[in-house]
Length: 484
Ligand SMILES: Nc1ncnc2c1ncn2[C@@H]1O[C@H](COP(=O)(O)OP(=O)(O)OP(=O)(O)O)[C@@H](O)[C@H]1O
Ligand SMILES: [Mg+2]
Image 1 (cartoon, rainbow, N blue to C red):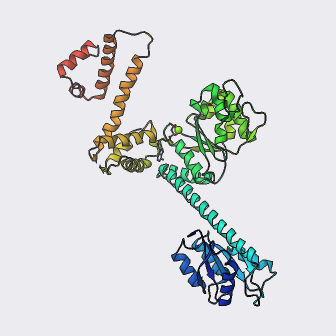
Image 2: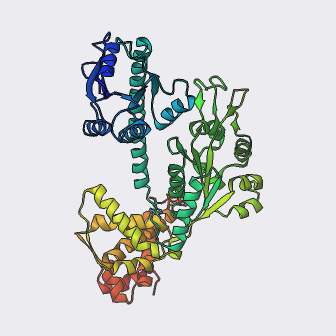
Image 3: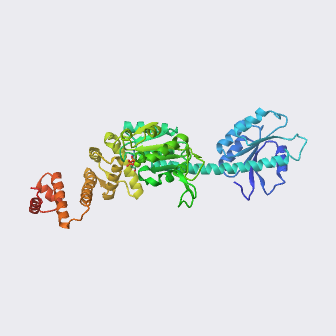
């Protein structure tokens, strides 16, 4: 890099006469241009550039030098060390003075610029000094620009890699492996995609993977939950508005489609989009332009659309809740994710993946996992699919004392259903409009809960034991509540 604000030059030249001419040509800028090193062979030049990767900014090389490594090969080898090195080639006047193909070959090999040396009877300079010096300054500017852009590219690439790592899609089963291949193919295209699958199967994860593996990866991925957009705000959320478009529009607002321009928009729960918004969405997809509220001219947008649903859209069309034309527009390719129970091979791998994820997030060591937990996990029917499995693993780790067994798995799953019956019973009891005396509600709750415990237990003794009440009290309660 520049030291003392000087551009450091490596000169590759094997004739002293020409080394002096180069020195002479640039000596009018002693505080800016510094010939840091002179070498007479290509091999020496490569050695220096490889070992001192930040010491040089611009390379000036004679085209014909002694040794095997020279000319275009040397240019390529230098660019191989670091593509941001800029090379100025100097050649003898006697050859190639008007040979355009020759110049072209040098540039194609990676040279920044080339010039022909003055005849041998001119001793003061090697070439027109202002041109020569300008080319060095320009080469240096280019080197800085390329260094800068390669640095930001590396940063962006690293960010994307990190995102993809967090969004790993575990796929062991045949069906999921096929889905991975589909994602790869879809990432190479811009095709509208509809992701179909029950809740918690990974629809959003698939959309993320398509976007961050596609050429749009450096642009925005904008997820929109169509079910949670308030009906009267959908248009302004999706397309934005101009300042003063309506009362209250104090400032202009960028719509989500503009935000996703050149990137990907993910329309989650697309079946929940009201019909009037469906018409507008269809227009955008057909025309590739949006109409902002309060703006007469439409705006061109280039957005890739991925939509997701857990509803059968064909049935929604029959019920006139979803537009058929929009369906065909979105459903160019359909990806369908199976419920977890239909791909049990994934369960063990997913479980281990989540163990690793959460232990590293919580800063905990990996627990000692009993081999037979997987059989226990495979027996369950996972109505909440992968999301539920993820929650169960989190619960397992939370309660674990370092060891995970099939029993702890049962507790982690059963714990959930115990809670859900409590929740749903309370919800149910509080649905009514009028407030009942507390003792009535308590009685109803006891009746339902004890019935639930009886149904789940092998005997009365078992039930009373689990409920934590003495058997005589249990019998009495059952009688009182009309359960016997
Ligand atoms: N194959 C998989 N590998 C790793 N993690 C997964 C996989 N499938 C789903 N997940 C995880 O499970 C959770 C639920 O996934 P996601 O939100 O993508 O599901 P969804 O189908 O969009 O659910 P919903 O229908 O409820 O919106 C996420 O945390 C996701 O990372
Ligand atoms: Mg989702």
